[in-house]
Structure formats: C-alpha cells, structure tokens
Image 1 (cartoon, rainbow, N blue to C red):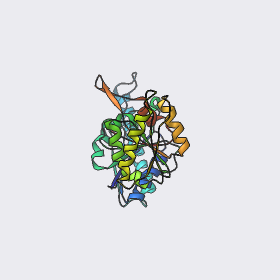
Image 2: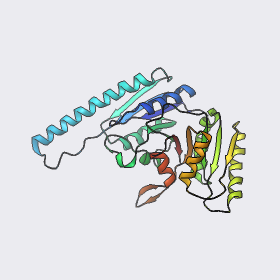
Image 3: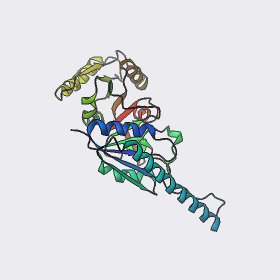
Image 4: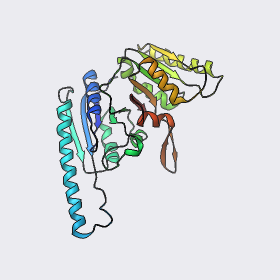
Length: 275
C-alpha cells in the first residue's frame, strides 16, 4: 500500500511553506498526485454596520478572499508542481472545515498545518482538531518550523486501543520508508511494565511481518504521557510521531485527549494521526 493522492490544506492567515514542503516530500517519495485545498467565508459585519455600508464591507471582504485564494493557488502550484505526478487545485468561499471534509474523500492522506488552539480563525483556516474526528483519513499535522518530512527516525506512540491499531495500519507506508522505527507505550499505572512490554512486542512482531524492524521502549514507571513521549522522541531523534487520535463525544462535540491535543497543536515534530 502506498499513498497515491495527497491533499494539502492551506490557510489564508499564515504561511503554508511547511505544509507544502511535507506534501511535496510525500508525493515525491510515493509517486503521488497532490490536491491543494483552501476555503474562507465572510465574517459577519461589525455590529454597528448596516445598510449600504455593511454591504460595502461584505463586498470588499469577498473580493479580498478571492484574491487570497488566487494567490494561494499560485503558491501551491509553484511549490509542488515539479514534485508530484499531477496537481489539482480546489477552493471555495466556504467555511474551511466543512469544505475540506467534503473534499478529503478524494485523497489517501491529508496534510495540514498545526494550529495553537487559541489562534484558530474558523473562517480563514481549518482547525486540525476539528478535522481529526471527522475526516475518515489519516492526517499529518505539520508545525510551522518543520523543513521536511524527516523519516530517519519515527516514533509510534502506542496505546492498546482501536485508534492506535488503525493509525499504525494507515501509517505502514511511512513506517516502511523510515530508517528507524521505535514503538513506545507509557504505562498508566506502576506495575504494568511487563504487560506493556508484551503489547509493544506484539506490535513489533506484526510490523516484522510487513518487513519493518522496530525497537520497543516502555518506561519503568508511570508518569506524564506527554512528557515521557517527548523525552523518548528526543532520545531517538524522531522526526515524526504516529498516534491514534483519541477522543469522546460530549454534548455532540468531540473532545480530544490530552495526548492527541498536544500532538495536534503543540508538538515540534510532524504528527501522523488517525482514527
């Protein structure tokens, strides 16, 4: 299994260089085509604006959105045209998340920029946290400082749940391309070290069946999952972390776990997330 179509979501309110570089890396590595997607919608007029003045503001904003979408298409094509087997551009005056959820049916994998949760403008850029639970495709979340998809060392953040099993399966092409793979489980309770070793050992054996050799790491003591994962990632020099996207529904809204939220918004490494 390889990725044959990569979709990259672009934001209107920040640079997209890191996402475009990573999307280009994937397309080049797997001989894939790339679909670029961007959308933005009008904001409601200011509360004190009405009549002709309000319409003028809306018309000006609509024109600005169209200009920005055109600029993003030019940027997208210039960045990836020589790296992909084919390129396609899709854009609309729409809220980014619903529009991207409609388009992602055409792709194997979605590349999106990391967004600190307090800085997401829902009318100008998709929020990775919103996409994670609904896309039905794996996401690669890219921090803005990332220069390339570094697969010299990849860390699998294992937890024995459906989402992690799905993520490792979806990431098989990435894991096969990595030079070094490490599987880590952080025990949630002291005294469960042997159980965790057995579980990551099973995952490593399963990967061997796919021609992938993996190391295993289980800390001796329970502790902060985010902190211990960061330490392990630093120790093995991981350029990417693979994890299941965990969450639960609360009043019909998805609430992400602390680990998933950290990987989607705060990690310094690319995060491959799936559910």
